[in-house]
Length: 116
Image (cartoon, rainbow, N blue to C red; front, side):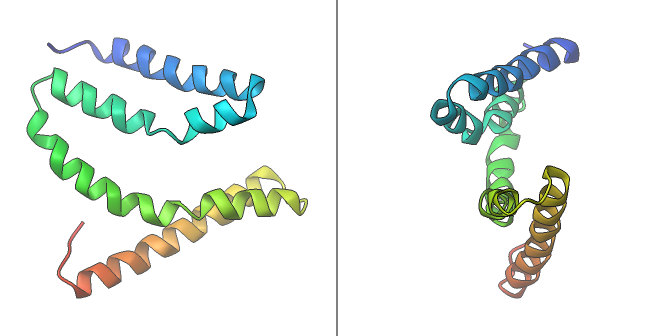
């Protein structure tokens, strides 16, 4: 069953909006919902429902390796915010660090024959 792109957009947007609204009312629950892989789960659901299930396994394997260099964002960004840096400076630094770590990870994995 293939849904129109705009229905997928609305449903996925509702999940993201719901998570941000929840975070306004409950910090702990909002944090839990924030770290759940909603985009991943939505993507897997859409792929399977559209008969593209064979794409799920390679997508998840690649996603694992892409996830690792992004994890420091959860440490660097709050550290910078607590020290008075603005959100955009913190996000910029966190994203720059993630890209740097991703490039380093690619280089290291390449030495072991792993290609992303």
